Image (tube, rainbow, N blue to C red; front, side, top):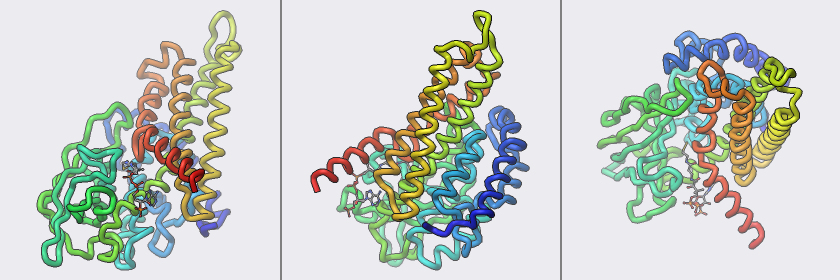
Length: 388
Ligand code: COS
């Protein structure tokens, strides 16, 4: 098992996060929704708690939790609105892990301490207007020019781009290779000339999170900006896939945290409202919905924990991570639907938290690989396993 932090220290950290969720984050949710932003004082508190550096190894100034610990902590954090998780999500996950996994010692020393402190927000720039699920088909180009590369292209739905100090940019370095093989990853400071970040997108849910287009026009970077150095030229797609595998366990944990919240809200409502002369919770059809939520939540939590253990033990868990993301996020969708149904008409009203949660969790089935991409990965590996 990867070291992670000492068990006692971890349990204390978890308790601190659980209290922070109860006392600071949940009470601020409506303000975040109304203002479409996270209050500055909460961002400062999150920084002070060191949450930006949860997964950054200790030697680079982070907390250095392992994947099973990350799964439990993210589940706890995601009992509150997913918007708070999104603030740290790229530094803890897709924005930093490429550097942790494949970066050179110089790249790690230069960036990870700032990422861990939250002084630099790291964004992951893979998706493009014409290439989302087909990540190997990206068109952004990085053309060699002497010792440099010049990047041109547009990236879409880039989380935390407006806050970013650093982008991991995936670009085609070999125009003659159409698929995954011609793609490299570059570490690009956000203030490099030629980068424009558009104003944040308006979305169905997760208000307060920031996603934007990022446009690269003649952005010149040295060959040393290739993630992992020049020897990892054309290896960027594989880095992206490894980062996303780990991210898929993280998203599973997010789904579990939100599912627990939605079940708790629905249970409280079922205990407080009376119809036909008795509590909603005494009606068997309502009990059926609660039971289905509880059973799926238990299964989802067990799956996240088992997959996190596998990742920790074996250093990868491609099939398991896709199963986890697929099952947990689809289950969260069903739990949201039942939790809202238990509320009846009230659930459709903005005064009730379930209305917001229902919108917020919809994205879980889309980002970091849609449910259909997870099905594809699972099926391919299942078939390949039998054929071998
Ligand atoms: N870990 C390490 N390497 C991986 C990998 C993984 N999880 N998945 C694929 N690779 C490697 C393959 O082994 C292959 O390398 P070799 O040619 O050396 O064998 C290479 O990458 C290409 O893989 P593959 O042929 O499977 O690529 P495809 O173009 O068919 O794409 C999918 C595979 C569809 C799974 C991929 O494009 C994907 O995950 N898309 C979704 C992207 C996504 O999640 N976007 C979310 C936005 S970013 S937040």
